[in-house]
Length: 358
Figure (tube, rainbow, N blue to C red):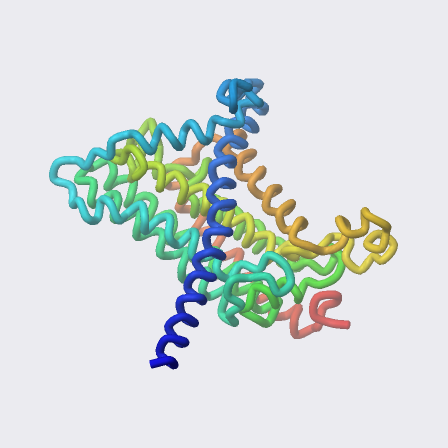
């Protein structure tokens, strides 16, 4: 009996500890998602010579409109969720969850610094690929369960697009796997240990470009947002959603953007590695040396840079036609990745320095 009580309390302690850790991670992530929408409106506003949100603040002060994401969240919380007549209610409600859950679950294996990760599993890269590919089911189910032709058309477009670019992303990840010799994300970062010249972005440059552009397409962001082509199919797969059900789809899109930015930073730009790593003259400076040395702040800077690129692309390029998007995925990206995998294989056999040779 005593052993059972000790075992039960031990398990309860582990569960409580895990829940607290997840909450400590999810709260900043959700805040990041909320304020990414604010950043998007301000950045695109600046690029188009507009003000962006600048009215809603806190305690009577506008504070550059920093209260706008909170106001949007509160508004959506109190809006009615309308389920269309003839819709499959269970699937209609579960579809947004199926879109958001993979975007959050993938963070379990993301290393934030050396030895700092929720689950340091050897097949981390495979786990990320498997989990993120589940998100397409949320889109398909949302389109089908809505009992709307517009929603179904948007879902089919999105599914075809995600499948096409998922293959290109998978081949790009094969190149990273070959270069690092490991599926563990922490070991992939450590394989890029050294200054900026040791990062995989240089030998894997075509794969880096393919991976990031495919990530933009995967998240249905402009200029690849044909699944939400307002002029053609209203709002695509989530046209019948309102209130918090719509907000969850919105959260999933922006959470996926942050995830793609984090993965691109880890796989190609050395994760938490400083571009000045190994340069003792910089990293040993008093006070400044701590900032110039490798650490979690470098990962945040790289993620912020790629998120800015997401916003920059949206403000710059018009929406592509659907056939152009499909051609780019199947006829351009996939052949490039296959050819470059062969090139990387030759480079590894030749022990090309500084990545695979002394």
